[in-house]
Length: 62
Image (cartoon, rainbow, N blue to C red; front, side, top):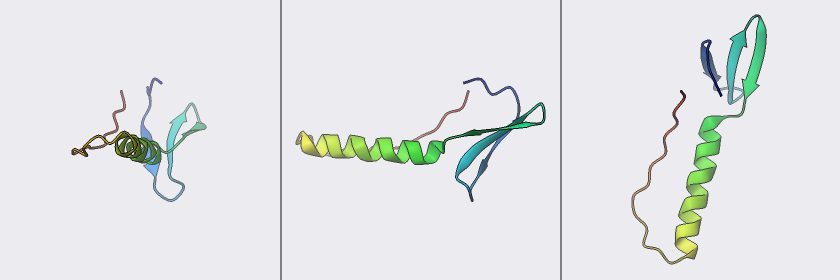
């Protein structure tokens, strides 16, 4: 995804929004996505009896 114009996160709708040429584009909540993936990783490690180690989440937009 290429972000050529400013974007912002709307905490009320939990959406990433970009205004381009007068049109509004809405993208899924990246924070929610990373939290889900983090929980899935932790559950997988637990199911595989892998010792829990510190894991962190991060979101990068480029």
